[in-house]
Length: 244
Image (cartoon, rainbow, N blue to C red; front, side, top):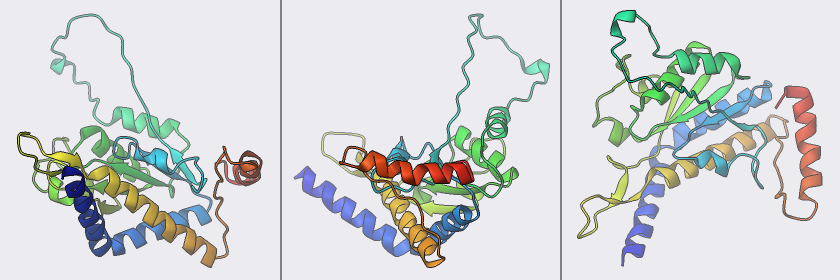
């Protein structure tokens, strides 16, 4: 049955992550711990269609993870015209401006994600963040990214820019299963793989913090009795001291 095939593929995926990514996951967790212990913040930006929401402000999650996103909306009803003769350079401008206006500081850690490793906006954000002195940790599929060409003008893909790269071990083109009668492969791998990696490195980070004598703030479920009151005692002191 397709369900059993899917579950088997997930087991294989997670086993591959455990055997091939242990060192990188450990390094990432240590980077997170070091940044937090020094008053830094950890930002998650667009992790595989919103996986970051599984870690931010939820029961069992640490308070040091924060969202980072930006958007630019232009309303202009004139027809599109050639503007190449104007000499306007826009590449990198949006990401650079967003970072400059944000609360991200050098020494903070920014997680970014592109399964193919070539999404222009993600490559751009990673590049600008590194230039700013932010430590960038990338989640990507190395099998996928090595089969595609870069499209950003810098000529690089995400893993070539990031401070550290974590391979979510998704296959090229993302999905895991061939299904008779369907041309496209079925069942995306990057989401569950990336979530597994993020929680694994978070475990490394929390353990290191405790070993170093630093107690990280971990939230209780807000819907469990007493959860909200407890969470206030965790969030407010950190916000007053560190600003997050």
